[in-house]
Length: 364
Image (tube, rainbow, N blue to C red; front, side, top):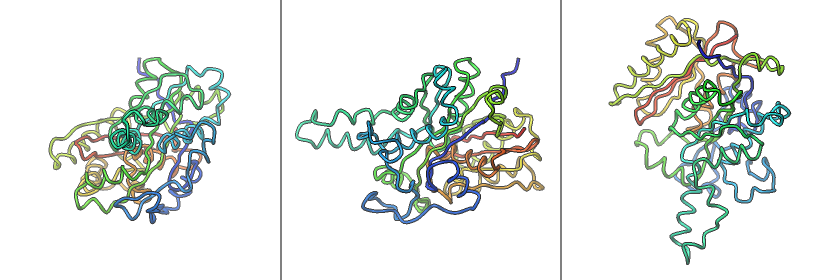
């Protein structure tokens, strides 16, 4: 028996457009860039421009109590998860162990890890570090705090996989539900802008890619069966058709690998190439951009004319949150009713370390 397909019945975003899905929807639908000059006193580093969540602090959006040592990526994640579950908090309270959380991240908070290590090395005594800040150095800090803060008691998982993290988290969430470990899943990814991250990105990029500014944000989605969504009075914004991943060994092989990945994902979802109306590419820097769009064209055909939603020029390189924000961009563009029956959307990405991935969403 084939697994019951899951639908997206709600979503939330924290982005450089502001806090909440409405702010994100407004920015995407207007095609307005959120990239601007970076406050170099707050974020000293090599990038003059970037895209940060405006006026964001943990105290402002999460609360003053218990957030003194909460780092930025954790606060962003807790805020995004909170914005999503506000609509079904009563259900969550009744059966908290039936709700899972799968959250993607880079390395957690690079800023927290490097600051804590520096304090241990440069302080008068290595054990004079602030022990309250140690939890920020582990990768699953954001997922754990999001669950604790909002009373989520089901499986809690952190996934890391570069720019494709959101797609990898989505695939894991589907398997988690298929295995009977939960009745609904909150899935998404989060990334922060920080001085340490900016320097790591700067030194890790080729010279031609250093012009792409960094961004930050989070997007989180509620996945459940269509029957559960309907019984709770929630509509299906999109169905998760399939996800897929492949690897390539040489840069020139990225196009072929992604094309094969997309063909398999469309076939698995039962979607004809002509039905793909929206494409949200990762748009990573350098020659990978051309290879990504060429791979999609190879599959959809020359006559296809989908709507392209390019997120990166609007919110910068959000690294681990990229694919999740691409998915949020598809839903934002679709409007409050979600994807129309018979309509499909394709989310794609090429990670410069040799992995390609995609997801297919369908309407109805």
